[in-house]
Length: 247
Length: 176
Length: 74
Image 1 (cartoon, one colour):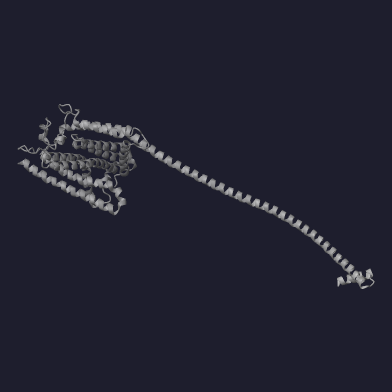
Image 2 (cartoon, chains in turn green, red, orange; image 1 turned 90 degrees about the vertical axis):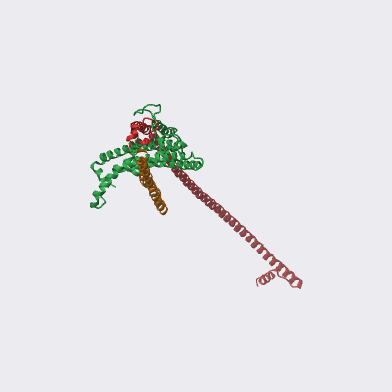
């Protein structure tokens, strides 16, 4: 972007998101790229956290085991609270989404790391998976009664068609906002850190820039978790709509 | 929007947003699907059943421990009740023994007192008898002495003392 | 010329981030006000809080996205 012609500041906040082939060459659909590497590391982190952590099966949990139990209990309770008992069938699915997003986000915070979740390709697939699953599930479970989701029975009759249009639009906007929220948050945070890092080249403002990077990093740690949480909780809410369409 | 980037996107240093470079989408989606399937398999086959088992086991242990504690408590209460009962029994037994002993002692005492009373009464009667004898003896002696003295006195006075008359007179005087 | 206009547009779109900040602050502030009035009900509403914040923030992210598109993709 704004590469100053007279050799001043160089901001390349988007460079960090480039997909690169690990071993060079063209990027085909099967090429191992940096995104594949960091997704693999996310799998590794999930294994480390949930499988290795719980290996001892002790009644009084060790630290790593309590982290695994905490993650389990956190998502389990979320699914149970929002979707009810019948939502627990889809608990492994939701847990998969949460663990992947949270691990990818946190691993992406390591300096020079690559964040898979900052790419729309990834989040759009995640969101579309949720959207399609929920829609199909809604029709399978409730049949045509699922359309009652768009027909607000508590509203005055004259308003209902208008509301139905609004509901349908908002229903189809769901995957868009669902995916763009996650990728946008992660991307924005990383880009802002990169911009601050660009300012660090000027000696006079570099302390402020480093301070800014630190502060943004702290915020990003928070955002990484909250976005994973929000993605998961919205998945639960959509799932609830599919299981009980009458609100 | 990404029309001109896709063309010039062979090199790594392409301008624009890498997110909108659709030539890499296939790659990312492929690896994402692989990743998700792997994580799903790990979670549903290994991690989640294990953690669920651990949590269930812990819940069971806690429930069992609580039940055991309740059991212990009930047993302790039972033992306390038994102890209390034994104590009360012992106390009544002691009371009974004390009362029995007291009664026995009382009867012994009564018997002893009665015996002593009887003995005392017998002794008293005997003594009374002896006293009466002594008294009678004494009275007789006094009479004798009086008769003798009277006879002597009569004789000394020069009268002829008929023993029988003196005797009668003395006796009458003594009675008088 | 066109590129400069796009940069101006990107700057204007960035105002949306500030608007989203107002929205998020509104959600969180009202939650806090309600939570202080009735602390016992606060814990049950944290999920709703985060959903509300997420919705408010998503629109700010849209503005950010528009800015990015104007900067890099147009």
